[in-house]
Image 1 (cartoon, rainbow, N blue to C red):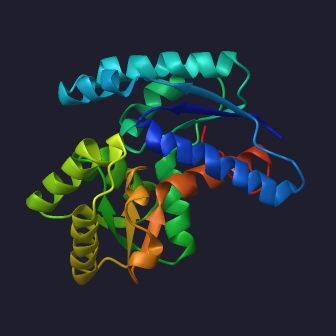
Image 2: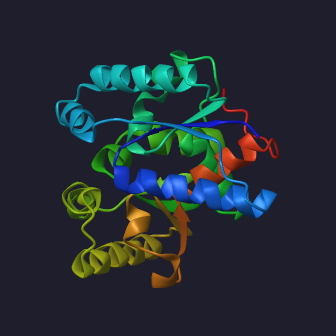
Length: 237
């Protein structure tokens, strides 16, 4: 079994989910008392969020590259950035180490393609919904088109993520809003909806809607398990 490196803390709420899913899936595959071999470096999210607001992606990339070097030096065989948004600096992080970085968008693209879908709704931070690093990679790497909410929807989903979910606040009115947005995206032609923020699966579950949801936290963690146990094809570097 390979050792999985995690760059977490963005936020720690969803990083805890990564750790839980990794261990559950390893136990399911290997049985007995087996659990995941994990190296975790958890950043101070306040430092990252400040650089996001300042559009200082170079500085944010340097912080995560330093985290990556620490995880690799600790003995990780492969690496995950435990957040969707910060894959904006994935190339910087990947270049800092000699171990594979499993890109979340590639894992999500494979999952969508396995369902035979070509057009999905996309919910996440405004950075994820509005920048090309995510939607563009889905399209070019997997041939998947993305639909995002209107300006009001993007603003409110972003607010819910940063002001509530990253602080562990799960509010019923926010859940209703996100479910309504999912319905709107479906009405516009989305075949499924990507929860492209690792906090969103803490708020909305598949049981809340008939629309197929893609839980990026679970998808990314399961790709790491496949790589750690060396089954499937996850050659992301």
